[in-house]
Image (cartoon, each protein chain N blue to C red):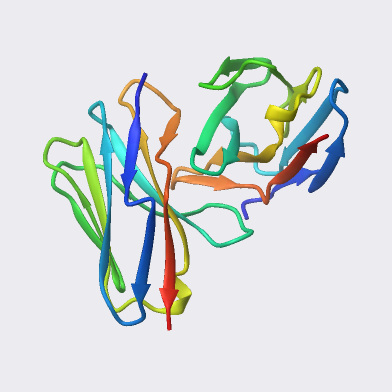
Length: 110
Length: 111
């Protein structure tokens, strides 16, 4: 979909370790978003970017940081993973016709 | 902050029957979007509504945007097994570029 890929698709990590998730797009879209999805909560915005080095917080940004050094890559970092960050993480871009989501990263923190 | 609520959370439907899922926002929206997520998949954009009172149809799916632009509904007629999944509404405020998603309605179809 619209050239958006996420990596890794699955990851298991230990509490307290740093984790970085990558979102890559190939169509030069300005806006990129990171959401997490948990049962009963729908999709909640973590951080978003509106250009290279331009980012802002979403509703659940605590414990997460992001970076966008190139238009095509938007990285989400958990500095010190906690069990509450076990979730499915989706990256998205806006295409003028709604959002296009990546396939997701299933992260388990043990 | 902005809140978007969806009801019901779960919808068990007999194949061939109709159902409606509802979406309500605590604030007036610039537009509202609907997404479908199949089990194990990612959300896929269905439609966007912009105008007050707007109604749009996609085959058996009918989407409405309320007159006050604070609520929306999705009505599915003659439900099929291919309709299984979770349907999310998502609202966009006039002053922002961030979508706020409802909790979703998970649809289960009984053949």
